Image 1 (spheres, helix red, strand yellow):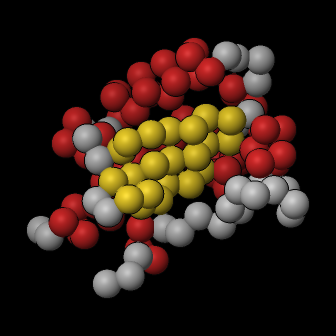
Image 2 (tube, one colour):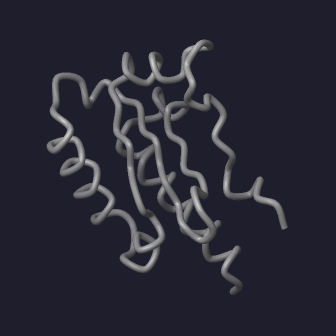
Amino acid sequence: MGKGADLARAAHGIEKALIDFVGEDEREFVHVFESSPGHLRAVVGSDRFKNTNVTRRQEIIWNHLKEKVSAHDLRLLWGVHPLDRDEYYEEHSPGSSSSSAYPTVDDREP
């Protein structure tokens, strides 16, 4: 399996685990994408993070990922940005400088 296929497989597994965490009703707020060559990042918007500090959010999401995703695949994930839905909407509003459309790993240039 080539590096691109390995990255895509890892991205899909991580995405599945994150959707499992937030639930089907918030799946549209899960984005896993290649942030630099060969490395993934994720953005997760969920009301499960409401009134939770940044450190606790990281603990919650990484503990879940460690249970659901192999260590081999997690080594490719360099960061997860957990937001509550209000924060997600603020960051992805039309006037925001943040990208509202994350490329999927499958959208990468060959």
